[in-house]
Image (tube, rainbow, N blue to C red; front, side, top):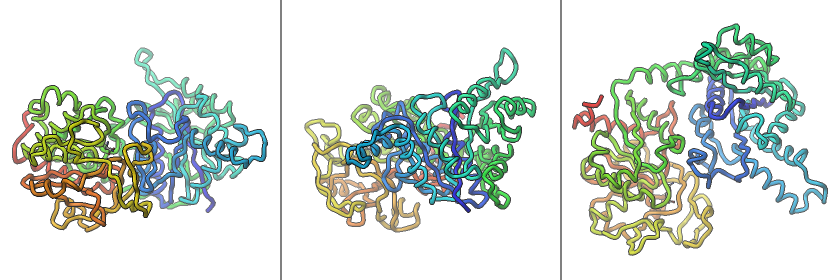
Length: 552
Ligand code: GLN
């Protein structure tokens, strides 16, 4: 079979869930036995999303190979079995960067370098490079049709139909069909306009996905079909749902996968959707509920903790428990103290983070969890601050700090490691505080050896694991013995023992913090073992203490 491509564009407005729709399409194709891969093309000029403000952009998703990518890659991995990397996310900035580098090198032999064909050729080459990863490549174009920024991407995918042949390319356009209360009906005009815009640049969609509150009636579908030049069967409702994991089944009932294989001329067996049916059924019938508090800085923006949010939901699924997430602002904890704000929780989490703002509030929350036997799970920054908290309050190092904060006097229990063996580079890295910021980040999957009998090794059920990292600072081995003597347990390290990757505590039912980000690898079909065990510990805490039961 030739490589096939599905291009997904968006219209009307952003935030319609294009990424999740792309991911769900991947799930449906996988359920039919096809191998899929994905690519996200982002129209902004930043070379990668690594340094983008999470308030604007949401979480930075980290891949096995250490790419800092758009959070949609997280959806793609969670809904399917794919493992993505650097090649699966391109921004305009990266495309332009490549073209300008070539121009400086003289590759264009003095010719005039233009958006068409040079930028569009670079985009097409990037798209074609991922094709061998699957039978079908699902390529999502960020932004909405009509944005100036996305034009080169749209032109490139328009050309690809001619290059690859029409049976190998399918265009899907996602729009909004709003229900207007005063008129008492849904309106198709925004969809008509959006498709008109797309057709004016030469792309005729094969399938129109309509985000809507309700399943669209046959006459509404017929109307959209007529105005948008498609068959009524090509108009598919993407109905609002309570839980994103319902979307593959919903799109299947609307006939989307059937239509797709028809357009792409692929022969497959019937889809095997039982795993999704089981998943949705279990989501809908939890036997209990736990309250988990996430103490963070970007609490107003749940998008910045997307993978964490999903991993906790998966941990809940593994225990048939509904996980209610309470986003709590670290600075409020700092001001008001933890007792009142955290009393109703069955578990506390300090997630990844950067910078000193809110750090003291997070430390107070960790102290509260440690002293009150509340299950604690620290992720990356959440481990570093757990070490600081323990050093200060249990090991007598009252000046303990992370070097990241630049506060003096300082016992730097977390610091910028000056020299260490980097497994990914297979070389010794030397650096100092003046080193280039982006360059000094430890990024991507690193091995970690687990200590037998620990919570970690019992959860994973294996001796060595690979988990993804994204941080600059590390545990300072200078303080290792002192902290261990005070009851800190180091239960995961790099194979050479140099980098501390997991800590746990003596005399606490579940206190585990890791230097990596396990949330990036959790999937609904395979909940991450640490999240599974953490939620179980939260449930046990609830049963033991009865905490929070009055509120429910
Ligand atoms: N700010 C910390 C560091 O750079 C932690 C980063 C994170 O939590 N991802 O090491």
